[in-house]
Length: 192
Image (tube, rainbow, N blue to C red):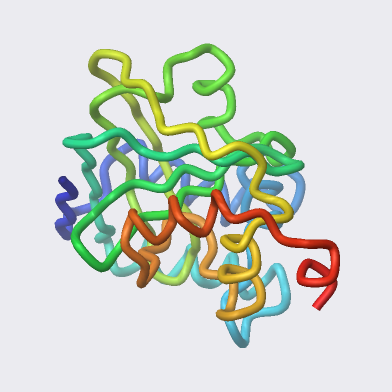
């Protein structure tokens, strides 16, 4: 179950945004922002800092909470993992957890503290991905999908649609995600 609500910026969210705008093109938060896919029309780093400044001026963000009624599915990729979380009959939440961009979720994963019953984070309008991520509760066992590369799911998410990015709601059921992930592509199909 997912809950999303608009909320005033917490101290933690304020610190994250100020880090993006002030740490200037070299801090830890800035490197995470740089590594995230860029929104359409925003190709320069200054534009991303401007987006963070706009969120600061607005003073609100979205607070997201996920309670796992069913276990997420986990697929491995060359730079981390994808988590697919069932949302409702025709939608699945995608989290792209990176091992290369100082993503704090990767550290939680390595410490076996990520796959638990409750997650919460904030979203900043225009800035992709979850921020200020927290995980608590008892451990859950994910559905292991294996490697993402070379599957029908990879084809669907990278060629049949524009890459949705981290913290995106996919227009696919959880059953579709599982089915596509388990269909390995032939070499010819993977090359198309």
